[in-house]
Image (cartoon, rainbow, N blue to C red):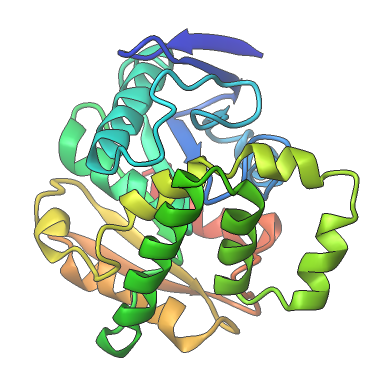
Length: 267
């Protein structure tokens, strides 16, 4: 493991492995290097890509100088700064692959940092919503901000888990598990993912500002609205491609997604 310091003093823990063009893997909510899908994906890519696996700020072994769940757009800007620091550590240029809400952050960074620093960006099921589902996203934002402002980390995590479809019995089982305290430690970062999602609409203006190829990926067996998010990203970008990952849900396997990423990122 190595560390790099971001613009506001945050220390970011990362690993760099493999050979070939550089690619940074951007986790979604409540995930980091050792809790989530990215480590097996990194292993599946390392033979043809130089993979950067990192802990987003406030997660794993990374610190968080901001530490402000109400920071909103400021938090997104700081996480873009984090990616800029990691790109520097990787040699000055790196494509991005973002999972779920990490995809929204990857897209924002690609728009902000430009083609010289981010030559390509791929996303898997960024949870942008159709119009009928937007009120639920607005309600979630309000409830999440209230829980975090009150210091109710358990309430914030439970709110997120319900939103992504975990049943009450599953949440109760997680509460009794040895890893629950570690999950609660990540609760403030839920606000960062929510901020990256904006108003949860497909961000047409941002997509048009991305000057490089964009790949939107979705699982064949995933809910319709998640496929629509990936398709909307591809159709809204200047140079977008949409691909279905056969047999997969939102919990995509490394072996299934890696061929898509290798075709796109090693051009």
